[in-house]
Amino acid sequence: MTVEQTTAVRPATPQQRAVRAARNGGEPTLEFADRVPYDAYVHASTLHKLQQPLSDDPGEMSFLMVSQIMELYFKLTCHELRHAQRELRANRVWDALPPLRRAALHIEGLNAAWQGLRWMTPADFNRFRDRLGEGSGFQSAMYRQLEFLLGLRDPALIRPFRRQAEVHAELTAALTTPSLWDDVVALLARRGFELPADLLERDVATEHESHPAVEAAWVRIYADGGPDNHLRLLGDALTEVAEGFSDWRWHHIKAVQRSMGAKVGSGGSAGLAWLQRSMARVVFPELWSARTAM
Image (cartoon, rainbow, N blue to C red):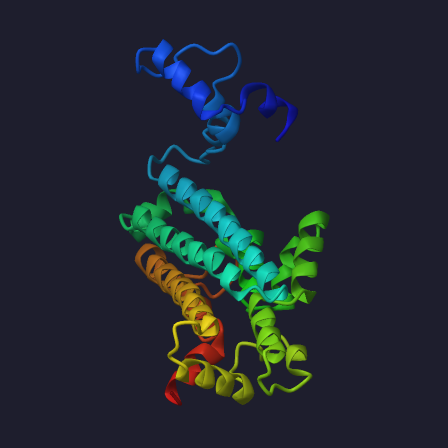
């Protein structure tokens, strides 16, 4: 916490809360010497100042706020996946399950955010689209962090951030840091599954493709139906994350189709066609290909 937060957010014991409730006759506290504690913790007043539309069109606020909500969900999901990575690296499979399950639920929230844009037709979007210039979701650094964590890495995608030194350095580090799937594969190797020693050195251009040895490992894992098969539970949790992320990409495609058809993307991409091609890059590929052999 910052100094500002600590002056307004003070710890309270259950006994102190009970005394306060009795003193207030069951009513909430309405007077505070400093800043309202909720605002000091959540920074709601700051959040609500971050919406600065570029046009007078009332629909732009929906587009802007939904985009900001998604950015927060990207960050929250990355937070959970990194937590899961730390647990897997320490061989604590059971402890990696809660953050993965939370990540899957956060992705559900991310998917639900698309509902706030279902009203937008090309006519609606065109009323403020030109004001965005070359601004595009393609340029979201936090989304790239999420993709890289999931094993979808492409060095070309960090080029837009070359003049943002800190952001570019973070994305460059993410490109060379093992993804969550790399850590899963390393865990399987430590658990005795026969995997090639150079498997983790796969080229980023092909890491979304299935490897027979990893696929065979998952076939063996799912053949064990015992209640203590934590690796199977891990596979289930990872599947929920991968499926939810795939749903998000599909919802993105449908939102683009609904709001702009097959027009060129704001950031200069092929728009719809580019998004459709990106769907071919599979998250946790062996978890899916192994099902054919199960």
